[in-house]
Structures are given as structure tokens and as C-alpha cells.
Length: 244
Image (tube, rainbow, N blue to C red):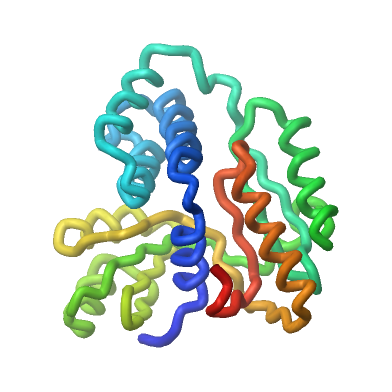
């Protein structure tokens, strides 16, 4: 059940590359805002808020920021008009791309996302054009700090995990979406979780060998992730180790 995980590599690269900490905090704050509006300010009774708080802590967002955002959301009308919209398309050489957004202006967001696809050698498609190439899974990443592989494997499986992949610097645990919260809550009592979210995991990876395509794909991802309305970008590109 162990082995090299392309998905955790992609997620770690994304985290390491995104140096704009303030922008990350703003995006997470928006998620918290919408979660509170939808389900209330108590994370114990609001799984979406609990997920957003978990993401905030993984990004090293200060607890004071998290608390202030929850309080603000509880007493304001901000966030009432936000909606989740997902766009799908292709990057260079047919790399599958899914863009998840949280926006209060769908016309602006659609135009910006389409521009990124067009500008960097891809094209935005219709809903469903690439999502069938991905599986929705809970993905939990734990830092591998001399953790006993057999012990964490048993703990994860007992909690309801589907699979576990042990690498040199991290351990990736995948779950069915409906089991994600149970597994995460069970493991976080014993292990330090560096990230945990329900994600779109590609079934197969696409390799780019043309240098221009590699540059274009890199710029496409950077520009999409830099957009204020974009919360997550999932893709099937098998990123080279030297891409920073």
C-alpha cells in the first residue's frame, strides 16, 4: 500500500510555490465566510467550516485571523452572494484542468478563467468534459517524522481510510468523500496533519516533453491560482521535479 504518490507531490509543490501568503489568507477567509453563512459559526456542527479552519491552519493562518473572520461572518451580510462555480478545460497537449471558484460575479470569473486557458495554449470546455478523468477523494497529508509505517497504516484503515502511501517526507491517506471527516478527526488526535481536504484526484497523469508546452502549462497554473476568485486548481500534469 506504499509507494510514490503523484498527487501529494502536486499538492506540496503548489503549497511551496504560492508565496503570496496574504492572497492565500484572503481566499481561505472567503471560504470561512461562506461556510459560516451556510451552516453557522460552530465548527462542531458545521463540517464545511471545520474543513475551512483545517485548511487555514495548514496554511499557517493565525488563530486570531480565523476567529475574527468567523465573528465577522456571523454579524454581517458579506458573503451572501458568493457561489461555487467549477470550470473545466484542457491545457497544452490535452492536460485535464478543473478550476474551482468562489465568486460574487460569475461573468467576471468566467471571462478571467477563459482568458487564462486561451492565453497559455489551452481551451476551456463544457461542464463534464474532463471531470470524468478525476476521482473525488479525501486526501490527508501527514508529515513523515519517523512514524511507524505499520502503526499508521492500521490506524488509518481502522478509521475507514481507503489507501495509504508512505513517502520519505510525508504520508498520504486517501478516503471516500463520505468518510473524510471521520478519518481526519480520528487521525488528528494522534498525528500532526499538514493538510486535509476533499480533492479531485486525476486517474492518469499527462507528461509534457516540449519545453514550450511546459512553460505554458506552468504559466497557466500560476495565473489561474493567482486569480482572487479561484479557490483550487486540479490538473493531470505529471509535473517535473525541477518545476518550482
